[in-house]
Length: 96
Image 1 (cartoon, rainbow, N blue to C red):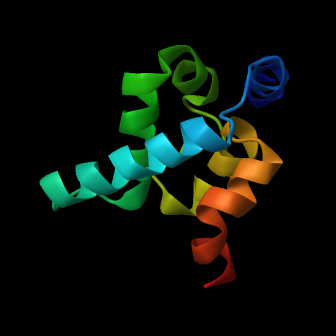
Image 2 (cartoon, one colour; image 1 turned 60 degrees about the vertical axis):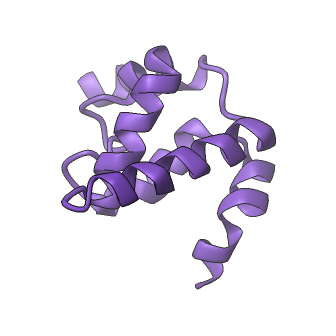
Image 3 (cartoon, rainbow, N blue to C red; image 1 turned 180 degrees about the vertical axis):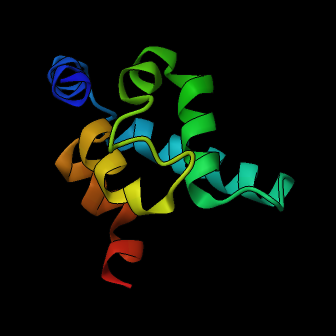
């Protein structure tokens, strides 16, 4: 029930657009460089919390929260980022 309610809440949140996503990715990279022990999911959640705390809190503890598990990064991007921004900003990683 908690996950279901969280997903409904996420759908009502405004997602990151292309420009916001570019800035977000830049800050994630900076965070990973500054904190060598961080995993990508930790850096992504922490930066989202610093820049968009309401959006971060809406995914906290759901299958879209990558803080404890990098396997949730794709869900994280789907729930927090507009589709166009995913492809423009994160496409190089998605395509490998």
